Image (tube, rainbow, N blue to C red; front, top):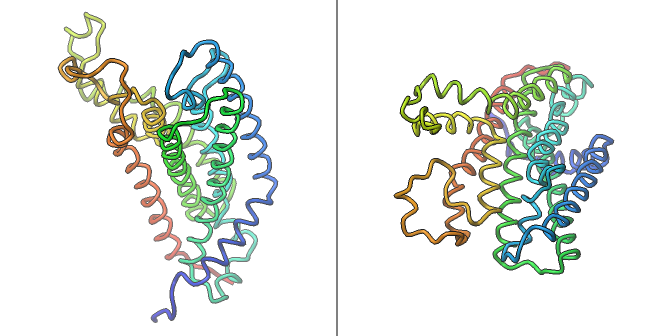
Length: 320
C-alpha cells in the first residue's frame, strides 16, 4: 500500500512542539544553568591566565577556549564532557517515552508519518543544542572583549564560528546515538544507562586501551624502545584506534582550529618540517584541510546513527 502525500508532512509541527518542550523542561533548565556557570568560571580563570602568562598574540581571543590553569580545565575540555551529557539528556526518551506514555499510536493516527516524527524530534534536539552553544559562544566572546579590551579579528571570528559548527556536529553525533537507543529499547532507564556507559567507555577507557591494542597489531621496534621512542607504525595504529571515539575526533578538530600554529595531527618527521617558518600560524583554509577528515567522520556518524534508527523505527510495530 503506497503512502499518499509527502512523508515529511508535519515535520514543522513536531519540531515546534518538541523544541518548546525541550526549552521549558526542567532537565534543560538545569543543563543550561550548569553550562552557564561552568562557562563563566572557566572563562574568568582563562582571562586571568591570559593576562599574566600570554604575551601579545594575534589570536588572543581563541586562547579563551584552550588556555587553562593547573586547577581549572580549559573550556574545550569542559565542552567535550558536557555536550554528550546534554545530547543524551535530550534524546534518551525521544521515542520510548512516547511508547511508555501510550501516545505513539495517537500521534501516528494523525496525518503525520513516522519519517516526520523522527526527523522533527531530531531537529528539535539539535536546534536546542545549537541555541545553547550559540549562547555560550556569545558569552565567551563577549566576556573576552569586555575584560581583555581587544576586539576579535576576522580570522578569529571565522575560526571560532567554524569551531561552533564542529561542536554542533559533535553534539549531533551523541544526540543521534541517544535517539537510536530510545528506538531499540523500550525502557528509558536502559537507554540512558547504555548511552552513559558507551560515552564513559569511549571517552575515558578507550584512549587508554587503544595503545595496548596498537602494540599487539604493530609490535614496537626494540631499537626505538631503547631510545625511549615510540615506533611510528605503533603510534599511527594507536591514533587510528583512538579516533573511534567521537570525543577524540572533536578535541583534535577543535584544537587545530583554535590553535593556528598546529601543523599536523599525526606523527611529524624532520623532513616534513623543512621550509616551515617556526611559530608562523596557518591560514584558516589549511587548518580546515587538516581537520577535514575529523569533521567528515563526525558528520558521517550523525547520518549513520540517524539512518540506523530510522530503519529500525520503520520496522517497529505500534499498537493502540
